[in-house]
Image (tube, rainbow, N blue to C red; front, side):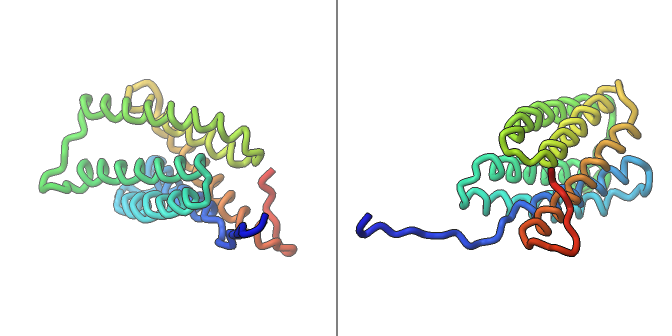
Length: 196
């Protein structure tokens, strides 16, 4: 039409950054829960910088691109990582001077917190089925299982090593997806990681 202006978006996709952020944070959280190390500092750092800020940046950029699902998922889970880092700071470092005791009451409230995030993650998993990239669905299934198994651990029903392995699988699959999306977009003929 006459006088109509078409604007082409030539900016890069921020989704790989979001998946790498989730991947690094979840991988280190899984390793901590597996007992590979006992200091939560690395997990707190990953939760804030990669799980939090990387996903927040990705979500806000995807919001500008009009991708409601990705903007919602990355931004919401970025804020989850910030809240999780806060919990770790209060319970392991003593953010306000004293370390908060981790007792049965705390475990129950943490279990409910994780359970509700698991429900939201599961509802978002159904949306991934419409995207058509099976690996995104796989990442979300691991995310659902992470929330639910950690909730069960805090309810006293499941054992932590099972939740830790699932969290590690979430992290590794998300790292793989982030790298695969970059390689797919660049069109690398040398190395190509399938995303199904």
